[in-house]
Length: 351
Image (cartoon, rainbow, N blue to C red; front, side, top):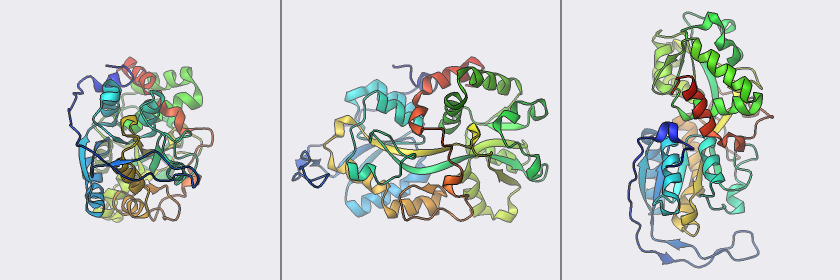
């Protein structure tokens, strides 16, 4: 197995999913001038989803009902599925990969596993939230935030930079999920923005400050909301989902956005790419087109409280403007070096 995702994928196993025969559709035009290669459709395709089943299965059901196309889904951790795709290579049964973060998409793109998306599809999402080479398209945006115990801390007591989390006064008071793809993307962003030496020093100091390890972002939020730990690193939408269910006035946990430009203030994206072996698969293409359609983007706004990336869809109420959070010095395509991040976290015993 390739080592690119080795730290999280040691236990990944290969699921053999057999495709069906295909029928050929007429050629389509992608740029308004030259006809595209013929696309094939059999009304079914295989999806590897690094996003949770509870979050995206209703959306997949919506797609199946509207399109008549059957989606055979394999769910799993984004990093583990990324490792599996690298291991399977051209023999993978997957035709589409839906990722929790840009880093995994970048790694697979660098390995040459994605086909180039049609120009009109790639242009659906503005620059800065999608690939620079049209190998994958951004689907939703998620801001990294600090969640804090509002009964123990006031807003002005919460760190404005992740660098403060390594200071002695925050020892044992910070929760995080080191195996989560978004946390690893944050560490990768820190490496990109501040350099390898600075990132090594931060991870070493953070690990020495006795941070509290949790399985996922949801568990971090629950711990803060229950008063188990005073602050934590999560994605913004976990708080908004829980607040929608419990009521904002009933939330002990509160959100704080690190200052703009801080490595802890990155806006990462979920995204999707079509595997090279499915370059002519019409069903796979329809699904990726659906993910950036108005219906799907509105679903993410209403059900997952993420930032929509396609134009014309308003973000959930209460969120800061997306452009106010974006770090202009960070290109999401630079988040591909997950292996080095995982090695760094392993070095200091965090994974």
